[in-house]
Amino acid sequence: MTDRVDLADLHERPTVLLPERTLLHDGIRTGQGVLVADGRVAEVGEADVVQERHPGAAVVRLPRRLLMPGLVDAHHHLTQSFGKSLVFGEPSEIFRRVWVPMEAHLDEEAIDVATRLAAWESLRGGFTTVADAGTRATVDGGVERLAEAAGAVGVRCVLGTICNDLVGGERVAEVDDVLAAAGEHLHKWEGHDLVQPSLAVSIPEVASDEMLTRVTALAREAGVTFQTHLNEHLAAVERSLEATGMRPLERLAHLGALGPELLAAHTTLLTPREITLLRDSGGAISYNPVASAWKGNAVAPALLMHELGVRVGLGTDGTRGDAFRMLDAAETAQRLVHGLPSGDSSVGGGWTWLERGLTGGADAVGLAGQIGEISAGAHADLLVLTLDVPELVPSWDLPWELVRLAGRDQIESVVVGGRLRVRDGRPLGVDGDALLDRAREIAERAVERAPIHKIHPFSADHRASGQVAHA
Image (cartoon, rainbow, N blue to C red; front, side, top):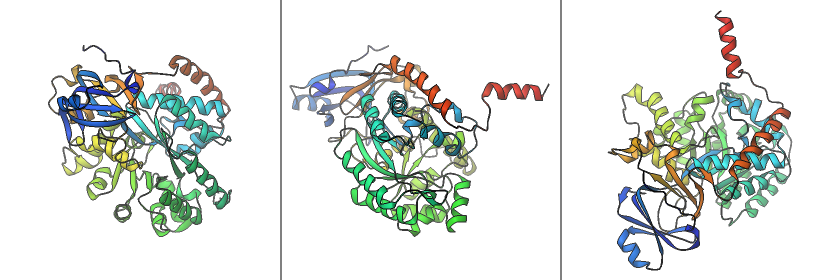
């Protein structure tokens, strides 16, 4: 096994990284040098040339290692990390029975710990950026506490603030008041090192026509993303049809609320016309394959949308913060649902899903050219993977292998903004053991006091009931 390399001082001075292999926008290259300075990638080129141009820079050699961009989780819920397996085996729309009740009962300490836990999981899984779709925690200052906690662990966050104004069709907030708070959110995080503000509506049915029209216009004007869960479950589509005579995406189009600012999560239930509307508007989607497998009604036609020109990123929906398992799930779901019936044995050839998790995700969350790639001027959000593992020896086609064979245990270093954040799975600057102890204690308290309604029993109870039934 190759000796470990310590990047703890990377942020202190300009440094040339010399990996055995480097994942660039045009593929995997050898013999490259990557200069990191002031939190960004300053130069990429032939190793000898980069070294000669910067004789005063430190040099770190990375033999038998791959240097690649950090992956982008285009759809996350950071304050849901206490739920995890509570939703396993549950039917769709678990937000109504688990997530909303749990998040509504989180206090400031619970928000802090839940976010830190999720951020650490994401980083150690290879995600350097996550798009949080907006916490439903109701405590004052909850969004700020979330941002502070994510920043303390070191993950980059596209941070949504929820702009709902309806509950059950009844108005619960004034549009002007909500938009004033949204404007404050945009101003508060403008220029922040790790936080990019975003606006969100949980699902279109909890926003009035006026709200959807004005909040998307505000996002468009500010140049930030507008996040919403769109056409995810059959029940939501039918509720929209009953209330408005239109499907959720059709309603957005009717209101002029479809545009390049849109980041639509899931989009599992789209008609051909809706795909066309989405493409022509320039909107982006987050394809969340693990969410579909665990609690969805369908798998989004992600490969079709990508080939038709829809902007596609990949997201976890907070299911598990493991980037390589997400890539595998993305390819596998498309193969099972769309590839097998049509005889398509490659469904994107592996590299499609790698790119959707990198530059595709960066574009979807509104940070194209800044993350998801190793290029001059981009943030130095990087992963160092060991290639010295049996899964990748021999290596014939590394992009395919990253999608189907790689795992988070191969990630030695996670760098965000030119600073080492996680080494060998452990966070730097945060006491990981103490965080886990706090999470165990606070999660139990938070879940116990929330009116969570599970339909499916815990696995041991389910197994026991099955044994009794077959006795």
